[in-house]
Image (cartoon, rainbow over all chains, first blue to last red; front, side, top):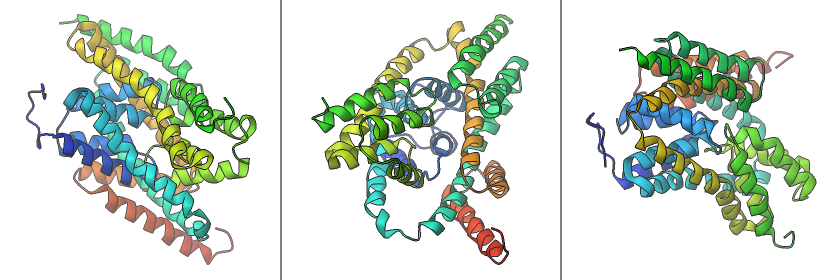
Length: 188
Length: 184
């Protein structure tokens, strides 16, 4: 079901799809899951190309639902249709499901939570590095066009700096950005 | 409906699934209100603890929902709450992704794709900044994040777990160093 002509580094199977997303779910401490997914699926395995990833990322973020869940579903669907979507999503969520419950059960025993928190803060900070890689690649892509660069910067400023509602920012920036892309595509 | 905790979990989390634009962070305040003030499933202290645990656990931050379900009705509750949060949004995403792919190559599709991609990146960056702000790492967290990103761009095959260990170790070392000083 791989319609993409770019030869994958390692062809996906349902089992490898499951184990990749299980691993992403289990080891993605402190966020940065989209960065993990990019690394595992695009950089290491070439299951989908960068273009399709960025496109799926945008769709996953704009639709309701956890972004990573949507992104996993999108990638699973691309590779194996509805079976792939379910396998990727179940793979992503089943690890954290049990770990989170185990943590709550062990919570009272974890009185040294103080130091745990310090370690987790450090882990979370380095996990952000994974996200920055995706952002750097996307920014390089966007920098080819003025409109795309402006859309990226405006979205970031609106949400992160001016704390505007995400819905509002997307509602304003998306039509303008899409219009600019439409204009670009008219040129030969 | 309030008599059956499983139905109550579904009634609370399905609507959140459908409005969680931008992912988990956008609905946490709403979940807190429902869980603590409306349904009285737990105290706000317990809720904060659950929130902290869901952040320490791997996976999407929305695993908070799993914990609430577990607290309310054990394993069944955990499963029901998780499904209630993830299934409705997933069905929408699946439908949109299907339509999205069928029209690949058309001019409007290309325009949408190229127009939306930079917004996705802007949101990723904004998300990174908000996580760095919530944490207690301060400037050190920004430095570690930037360093990890630079390392990965330079060596894409570097294993992230190695970076995580390094990040954790740097934070512990920084705290040990500063614990000798009067202020942390």
